[in-house]
Amino acid sequence: MATNSFLNSKSFAAESKLLLIEPDKTNRVLLTRVIEDLKPARFMAVKSTVEARQAMSERVDQFDCVIVALKNAPSSGFHYLQEIRTSQIPRTPHDTTVILVSPPLNRTMVSFAQSLDLDGFIALPITVTAMNNTLSAALKRDRELNSAEDYTLVKLPTPVPKKTATEDNKKGSKGPNARIVWTEKDKEKAELLRALKEGVGNGQGDTEAVPEEKIDNVRTFWLKDLLPGMVLAEEITGEEDELLIASGTLLHDKLIEKIKSLSELGVCRSFLKAGTSPPEP
Image (cartoon, rainbow, N blue to C red; front, side, top):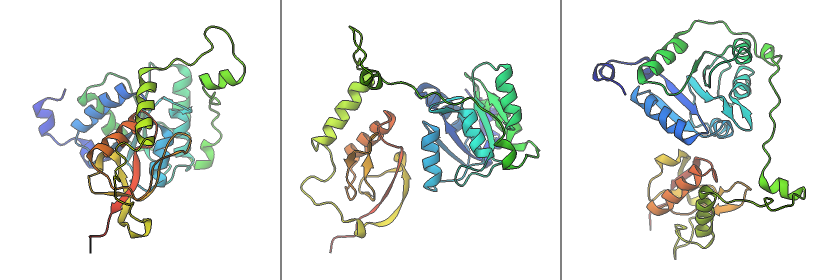
């Protein structure tokens, strides 16, 4: 990890707002630790480009640099880069610095990077010093980009949707292996959803939900910033838009932990709107 002399010096990232998009939990934790050692002015990590777009549409923040993994279903890091360069991402200028987390490079990847004016690559594992050098070089890079229209002409491979076991069953798959195998992650997800459905830890108890019009100081929060006593100002829905927790629910420690666990398992997004309830008369 970082040396004392490095930590005591001011890194270039300390003046920057950084966004990490990494679907792999192990890689996300590793990169988060390295980036946080640089003490950036602002840092957020999300699991997918879909979640990143939602965050931008919710006006959570604006970033100087986006670090995005190449593998980012349903498309790829290059597709997200193209969306930035063609001004399709809310509150993200088309000249935003973008760095790709990638496996060993090949000729095709280098060609896409040049065509879309990618600002740099990083490979894992990476040290704090190497990350700082890559970020500094990218953020200080003096480049003149093409117009947004020019980047629409870059032809990237069409994303291929990943088939699910359910889809295969709908097509009539038969045989001894034509069944869904539940992983530990599936079991944990089902247990959390069952607990919410049965009303365990729903945060309301014997009290009534706070009416939506009475919730004050509403703004968007990342789940890590939630505190007991806050009130949900919007419903929390699952992967298929099913209601998990109603608007107006008073948050407490156990419920906040359940929401964070659902987010880690990909059941709900990692940010939501919350506020405060009016004081008792």
